[in-house]
Image (tube, rainbow, N blue to C red; front, side, top):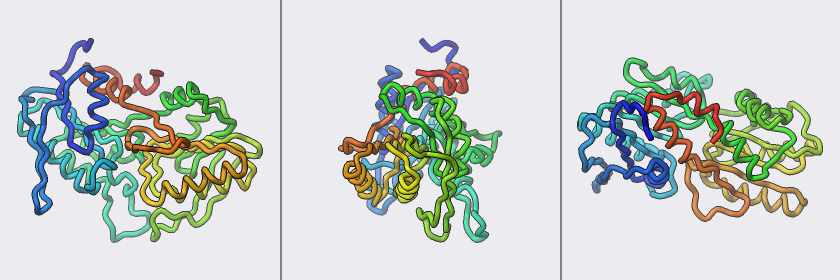
Length: 336
């Protein structure tokens, strides 16, 4: 039972976010507000809310990365802006945009080049100008993106998965001897996993050529994985080039079984092909390879080496905490 609600809850979804939204709504025992998403022949789109949300606490779901349609990340993001504005013009009391994967999160700085934009900040400004009071995302690539929002207009709520994912890993029997960070930048989050699992910690130091997206020129292992089972943790796996390079480096240093766990399994081409090759290599060499993604990105008909950690129950709990003026931080610290 929701105590002291700040306003009645209304759950709205764009079509690309519908599967995740329906799962969250089921946990909350609520129906989604009916909407109509339309795309015109020229490529323009709009979203119409078909019920009264005046004075409501509105939560709008959208999945910028989706395998359920042929739209681009930018198409889906613009549709989210349409939905936010529709809620604002419908006189919603509060508007929260739920984007499990924050678009442009890896474009958070210029990386030594001056003549390019900072898309993470651009998207933040667009979301708040459309009318969002809050943006709810999962394990955002850089915590500093929260500072790209104007606190007088909107703010970013970052959902951390560490304790919940560790509990799930333990329940599923996915143990490890050492947790490995794919780069030095992710080391602190990897340390949190290691502490929760009472495991050792190691890291790979990656050298990138930023003129070539999704490529690692060289990686160096810091720590010991000899004869140990490894949990390699990361926030985003896109084309899986970095992950495969990391796995090869770990095997060269004597690692045994390898589990890869990531918050956002984008799996752009040729990710499935690359990871399937790793699985085949593991079978030939008699070691185990497991890949774990979360439901921030949905994949159907996945192979047996791919497992999904569902986060819809966690998201439902966070929405209820926000609506009842509770502590989201406490949700991050509690186990489900």
